[in-house]
Image (tube, rainbow, N blue to C red):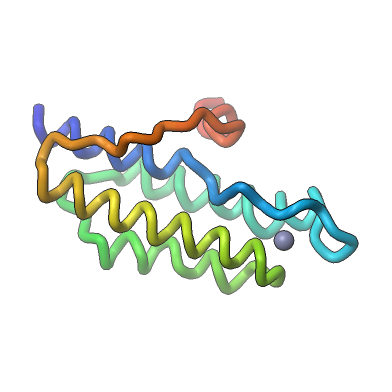
Length: 117
Ligand SMILES: [Zn+2]
């Protein structure tokens, strides 16, 4: 039961995409974000979720998510991705320590729709 709770906690963290993102610019608008942020995040997150295990390490999570930074050309979006990765890693460490603790902030996001379809 505990194991399921922790796996569930990990999934809930992953469905929250990086954000809020900056206002669209000429160089980085909706198309670029879908290509460089939302799309790759949804793909990587769904792969991680499919293989989600309660004993996955924070290092492994970081190693899986960090490559998303490489395919993002926009510094502001990259920073949003980096913040989200850090938040997930620290939330995951907190869950591991407390065992049953879940992250406090579960914000619904349109990414959820992508992932459940
Ligand atoms: Zn951007």
